[in-house]
Image (cartoon, rainbow, N blue to C red; front, side, top):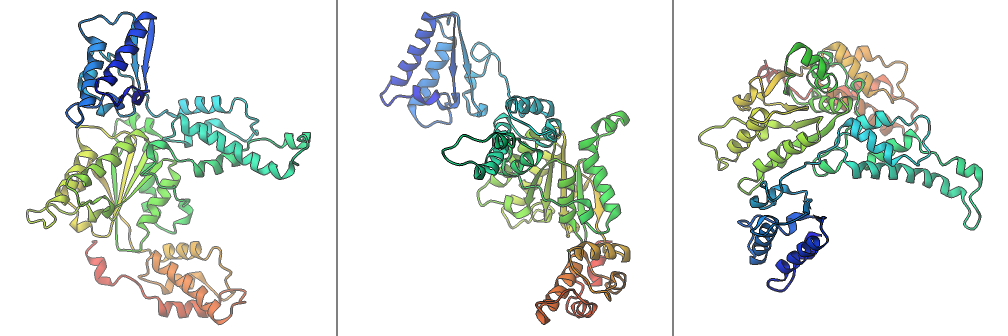
Length: 462
């Protein structure tokens, strides 16, 4: 183990290394395996201590010095290859660098088969389907997932077991891991590679979004198709769109659409609230952007959603008052989206209600290819929004949703949700034991809740 080589005495660490190599030569042919190599061989220019520098130098001479190493093979393992000293990463020392990446769908299925080999699985468990929905999961995550699913079965049958007795046969027969156990275990296990940035994928389906049929179709084409049918794009020789910008007046459902996309495309979902990337330290904001894209590439297919993108990507101007941090963040975003490195299987969605202040560099094809305007809902769309929000609400016979849709011209989705909530609250205020919501309270609610956007707001989006 890397750290056990280090000694508190001067020269002790180097002596330990020499002993290991001598022992290996005596017992040749042999393999020396150094785990957590970054602990003993960090970059010499970055370390303050003299001990680390001497240890690195000793390792370098032992691996490729004047004396031949004989029949000794050295294998090092690390999850931080970039913090190793460069001199180690050359032929003659570590000749081969093997990256063990995040497993793809077929590899995940094989790993699941290994971990469920001795498990009593129900017939409805489909490992192939499970493997295709666990993007970004590494081997340890999948092992944990199988363990967690099995624990759920144990929890179910524990009440039926008495302390001293043998477990009855009929109880043993109940020990079967079902598809539901895996589903509920999935909610608790997060992929390791996305630990800090992954968001629990919202359970919003296309049916939960009222109206906006054209916008839904465009989003499906831009995000779902490239992730689910990449071969179709190859056949026609076109590159799928990289980014989609949703813009429109507040309350029209831009964020809700992004949630639906995340849920329906079965991809990993990274949500970035614009301002959270900004930091008071120079260079940290750009590092945040780099980190997000690095993790997205590692665990593709991934959807990155920038909410309120105008807060981090406003137009770069010469007289910035924020010491140039916006310029640097925008530059970083531009190069990450369309720089020398290609983005594979990463879709980007951004939402804003101020498209006029976004940087022009972001608005060109190759970055945000698709600009989708989320309009005020028309009468049919308002009717379907009313249906979504009154789905679980007991309505009186005199309530006509068609009539309400006619009366709510200029209302956006958020306003209609507020009207339905207000009508229910007014009903409960008058009578806590009411059976249903009558039309008169909807009428009162309409007087109380006015459209949140004035006609003037619409002008700037034309």
